[in-house]
Length: 353
Figure 1 (cartoon, rainbow, N blue to C red):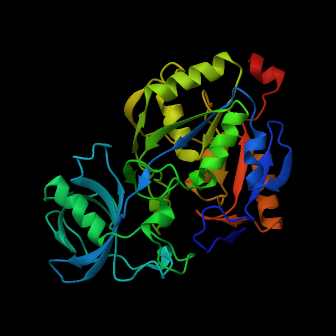
Figure 2 (tube, rainbow, N blue to C red; figure 1 turned 90 degrees about the horizontal axis):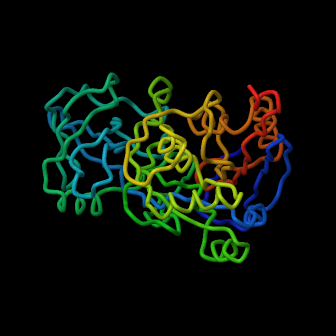
């Protein structure tokens, strides 16, 4: 795989690697995605808009330059934007690889971070010198204004030009709660949604505050994804029940949708509408109860996104997927190519066990 460097959400040459439930692999143009769907299928996407969550400023006690990347919070409530989990770096910006960024100055509870028009207090260190609980003291409206005026999209070195906020908003973006874009949704546009309708495919959305994809520290990255709040509308929950009754599949656009739906169904196998905090990690030992297929970006094997994909296909298939992505020079990261994986078909002996 190679890194996608241009911030183009729907390049005409975007490709799609397809894995069916038996592990068979084939290649297609990503524009053919809708043709993989059947009547009565339900496609669900994450409509979270992306925050300008990168804030540059200084550590008040030392005067040192810092970058704060807001990374998680416990609620979707737009009035409750005072407390965040944040990753703090020393001087520099996205042009330096995240893993090469220096640590911030030594932080301690009570330290102030001056971030343009905003000021925040370090409430606590979260078992790592880069990871803190941060509290903004301003009224919510001033925090929103400060983020809009001073914040930038979180960005990594593989895209050389600065990103604008519209580069990281999907076509269905609604509530600004994501810290990085739910980028699998870049594949969507109004033409593709109309094409789904013509095929008898239903479409619904949920909202999950997609977190960051990398902290630059291997130890800390193993804790990803952080807990993520989500909201499932009653219309989406009802659409799942309808698809099930009609024999259709539930197709998730992105790993965030899988995480929300599987967390919502963990108690009794039914997706209940409402808000909750997704705190589980999905992987090869996970038993999927809701999602039948996923359309996702391409991911490196050491990422948390890849671990979630292992819930859909066995390790032999995933190794073949990685080899095919490498052999055909698929593009990775948020503006890259895509994969479509159907949940593996269990052998009859497994199903009876």
